[in-house]
Image 1 (tube, rainbow over the protein chains, first blue to last red):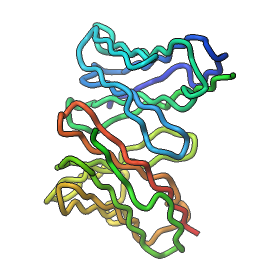
Image 2 (image 1 turned 135 degrees about the vertical axis):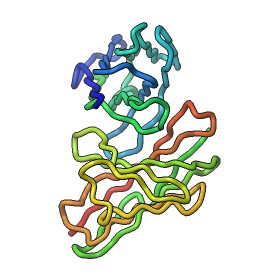
Image 3 (image 1 turned 60 degrees about the vertical axis):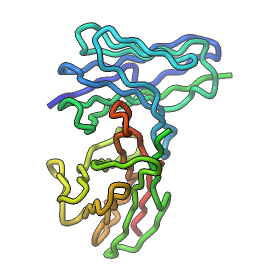
Length: 112
Length: 115
């Protein structure tokens, strides 16, 4: 079965700093989703990547999928306290079924 | 954009009783929805796939008689936790694929506490 590993597990950065979160899959990724969650709340959709080498941006967040489609990175530029939360990567392991397998999450704290 | 809504957001029930959680797609039809469970400080674990008009498909280790799933319409799936026990206390969250097919939206989640 497919497994996703996120790194780092937790991250504390000073406001204004850049940061990167990685998501590595044990198998080829057919669809890679990034979400943000506040503990105990729903998941906010950030981006979805499908094609090798694909890169998408939304405001100060950029996500990339490598050419081999086994690793994705999420990069936040000039972090703000509003970026704090848990970032989750999810993979559609069986190929476009909608069933997502998640990484363990990365908890981000941004110090003002 | 597409929105998935869950109700109730929080529920407390007594041991031995059953509790129902609803998941609705508000502005799109969802033939398939998914139910997840999240333990404190852990990631989401897929419980089952809810299929409109047919039986749900459960992941290995999930008791289908305990977690009853009904997907009676294209916009509503329900999860009923039967004969609830304190160990069933958890955060339950559903998801549905948007009409474009490229986005999977999640509900706000439901906190269940069994006392």
